[in-house]
Length: 126
Image 1: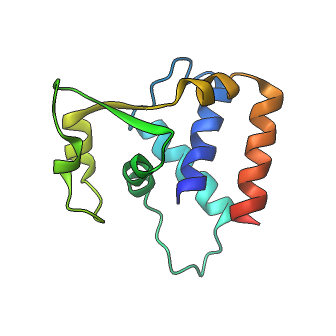
Image 2: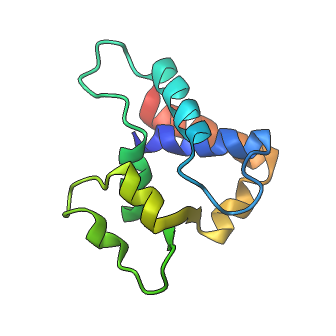
């Protein structure tokens, strides 16, 4: 799930839909995620298409962060450890996700973006 979410973010950066370091839990992100899922995951997979699961759980990666709508709000209170926050709660309490600035800057370069995209596919989706 996480590599596909990252590929969806890369796709939205490439298309110009993400031009600043703000990844909103939008319908467009969901649509791109689902299209990529259908492209990379076998139809008989035991895993379901669930775009908000990786959007939420990427918070456990050192490069993915959330901007809460309320100053000081503890985002971890949205779900029990190991569980996924509901999309309604995510949209109510989180303005957007964002990447480490260095990674976001790398993704602005077409060649570097393509290298990262190929690495994600080769490592996790081949």
